[in-house]
Image (tube, rainbow, N blue to C red; front, side, top):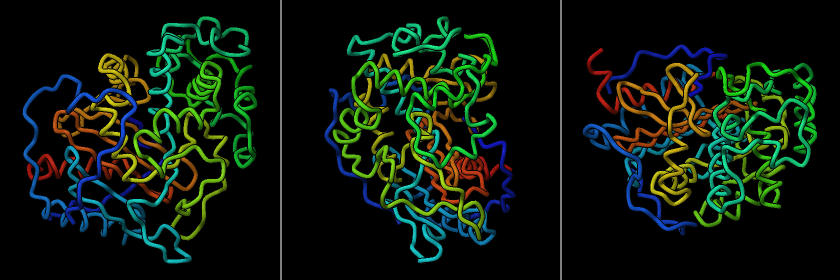
Length: 379
């Protein structure tokens, strides 16, 4: 998982030391398979009592908030039971609006797992295969891309230059851009690795995947997600909106708003906005077989080679925190930092949503995980 190497967070010493109701069941788009459909290993961790989790997490986040390195919302759940759900700081500092479980945040690269699930849904319908050349499913394909497969795009082994790192990106990020215009920004760039060779994380990979989804399905990216996932799962506050309403204000620092960014520039690699409650709904549905089949979920969560400690799946990263298997992804986009972690063997979900850039949701999530599974007590 990307743990934001480009930002630094000085965490306070972990404190030594509410419960919220479970979310309602949502209508599902595919036949439901009860429970987690992936192979488990080991015995699930015995977590602290819910009141202790709430007290510790509140104290931990309050310390970070007081140090101006956290403003946002955290949700912790085991299965469908919400163990902690609370915010610190303000979603709008000028208006003194508090955070809430239904406040929308830009989720950045957490978007990628929705894009990956869309590709797998199309595969299940027989409209493509992940082994296919990307050029097979693009209306026009740049020279030199013929050998790039959909699987390579999904696992960041395609070698496409990362368009968010190219010169001029900052000057263009507030401009509404079509998917084809976005692809044109990096289409002529040389490959940074040989396809299916070294791992090279690139937002461009998922931009191309979004265009494939549109071309194969005949629907705009946002419409496809809404029809196949958001509406059936009851995710009313998650969307690919070019002008998202109900969105927390994003800040660069405690005192300054972030630079504006148009949703279309994030597109299928980072354009979604969502809430803590909706992300829990998504995570529960994904790992219970309600989004893709068990076989496709295995594809999605298989750790492929090339990323060291955190190895890429499809739209996800697979690794360990405090000795416990962790599947998830982080997100970083102007004004927002996010993390969605799932401890699969423990059936524990940790969601951290921030509306400021100076922080590190990955380290915050790791610290919470350490407390939950008892690692902090042995330090």
